Length: 382
Image (cartoon, rainbow, N blue to C red; front, side, top):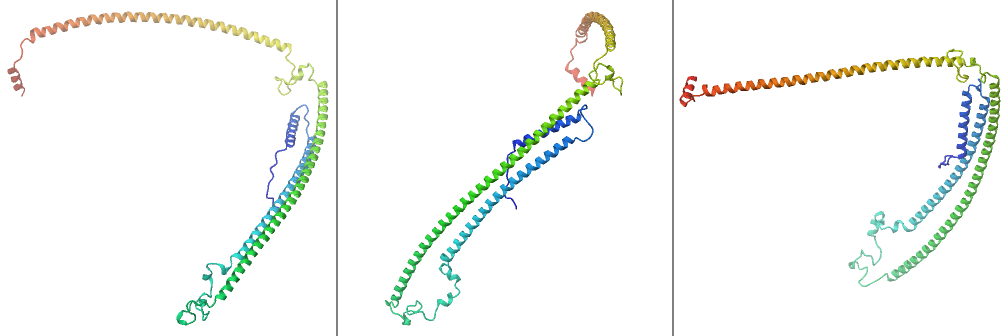
């Protein structure tokens, strides 16, 4: 059977608690395996038995859930089948009504375009003889005369028959409408009753499914509670046995003794076992104090040597600073003397230039050149 609907149930808090408990038990099991004092080589039979019980409990829970899901799916399938039947019945009634309407109201002879579909139309257009009042015969045919109505009685009879037919047709249509309305009301009432009965059946089925699910859940919870209680009892018993063994090991072993040989590492004699070491011996402490005193003296001598070296460096720095100050003073004096000599040299040079300029102006450049001089100079240049 193909299920058409899916069920989205919320997570069960009890199941989540069971998963968390299994995780905690797994962590405890790992800590027990990795504990050197309580670890044993071989197969953990108790853990395997617990796993088998948990597996059985999980399979029982899954079977109960699958049964509940199957019941729900059957219920939903029944609802879908009922809805499909109702839809098919509604479609059939609508098709029947459409067919009746076509047979009664949409006959071929009553259509406006019947003339286009009539194959004998050409034969009936010009018949051999219809009657004295046929439109094909004019006054020349002497079949009828003006103001003469040869078929009045027949026309009245046909009008009465047509009126009677219309009246009977209206009565039949009214009766048929009432019958159809009564049938529709009866069908609606039957459908409503069927839907109510089906809803009641579905409600009973749902209640039975709910009761079955509650019973299955209760049984699963009881089995889980029993398994958890048994597991707690076994865990408590195992813990008591482990505590007893540990106390016995502590009493009979060298762990609580003051023997320093217990802490010696058999592989590396210069190392100790941290979980068995009880502290240093007086000889070891005296050796350490002696080494510390020697290191203190060495540190003091190093500190004094550093202080002496710092004092030497400080005195050398002071001497260098004094020498630099003396060099700066000498440099300033030399600069001042150089500036004085440069000033006197510039003054002497200015006097000589002034005397030379006076000589040129007073003796050499006394005669001014004329235009004839410049003309003769230009001619000689050419």
